[in-house]
Image (cartoon, rainbow, N blue to C red):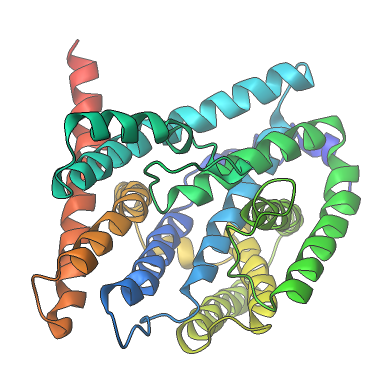
Length: 360
């Protein structure tokens, strides 16, 4: 497959440029899975989460980010260093405003609830600078405040800073040789070390283990992108598209079922492969899943899933620390408050601020 020749055909193709509404809907689904997985923090005794293997939902976002990174690298131009700078700048610019709002809300609430004096408040703010700048997965997490879900963003950005230049340097070599080798090496090491993929803050000597988990997930996304490209450039009959759609639905249901019933086992690695193959079908647009939602709803799903992911840890920390309701009601309160706060964060960052900027 000559990927260089496809740069001006497949990737610039109008159909590929359209918003993938199915992917946006799935973002919300897997964000809710993470939300439910963290419900275990609400209880002191029976702390079994709703989704026992919900930590695997993060792999969905790693794979998806890897696919979009591959698309950007293949379509990129200019020098590798300069192109990497603009890619990372665009990525951080899309993430940081929402992340910054969520971090500040969580930090101020933490300090307020703990009734920290001014001196302690300033000390905590200074100690929280490194986590705030998303550098915590390098190993420098410090004693300050850290937004719980930020590890994923930190690990992803560090991994992208390594992988994107490699893709720009030689896309085919990186996609077809380095990516599979790295995935096998990293997953093999993690399996031998822990037997599952729920590993984040184990220091390896070079970064936390979460960074290597991100590297494997992003590289899996690169391979997923290549498979989707191969599928997209081919024509299929309605019957085959229906079969692809059935396989797609079965794939996501198998992964969700596996995350619901199992926790921390070797099954993780099989589920991730199934997830990657299913995402490839969705990205190829050779299924009918994209007919489920329209563009406006899909944009809301994409933005809301991010705000929900960022703000929900603050909610379960509050409820666990100040259990103002009984254990039976905690899950409902957790869901309601998380959704409400995520909605406020969404309206602020995706509606109010853009509207104010337009009015200037």
